[in-house]
Length: 347
Image 1 (tube, rainbow, N blue to C red):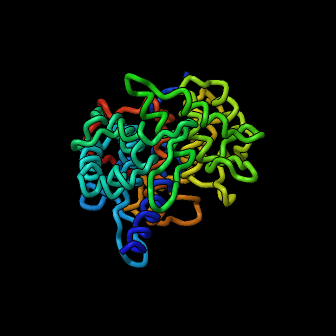
Image 2 (image 1 turned 90 degrees about the horizontal axis):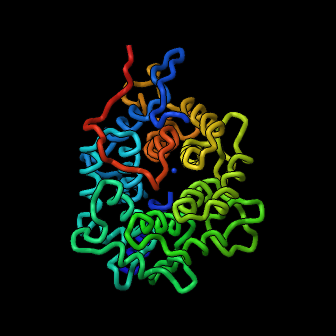
């Protein structure tokens, strides 16, 4: 039983860890394609992929597990795209269902996961809810209880501490929206993880500090929200320095992809690096399935352009929407979003 719980814990963590110009991306026509850079079409495709209209799942060894992390990424994407508000409401209702919620956050006593708690709190805030009362659970109080004396937000778990730059960043972003604000010590701790080249690592305190695109993209947004602009600026300069000539960004494996580029583009727009943001949007546009594609795939964003993969497209599309709109997590809101899942207007 312990082995099974450990496996579920690791799977949940993998799912959770795996974002003068207008904020609405203009449509760009190209041969065989329509409105390639429109985030609304991407978010609409994503909404249509929800299982039972409410969730995403991860399949391992032929077994489907709830993927709360990806489902929350979709909630953020719907808010950024300003569409699929009904799907966003349904997805958040599913994640906050007690059995699904506690499987993601832990029971709050023996098991409590900082990154998951912070990410869910932020999603509730984005949708206009109260994170201090999510089915009777005060996510803000629980999150604050996971802050260590040094400022780091850490997991409380029998399986180890899997907290990382994403955990800390989401915690700062969620707490910044509260009356008490983000704890200065937590922001200082995150700023202190910066590598000599200016970027930020996914995991702190490693023998060699290795800057990571995805982590830096989220950290810079959190530090800007926590009033540490100089620390954020260092990360933004590093992002610009590693942007490829085609506008894309590569992951730790060296593969240029929609996930890393989407998050980096969101950070660049949030940090007012507009020319770099424009180049990254063009890269993302090139990965979006247009009117020449299979009808069921139109609007989706492929992971790396190497052939459409339905297994990786949902996460790639969710994070690409953040980059296409450029709306940072600190300003993200579902207020005013339209209902329904729009598609590309193809001939």
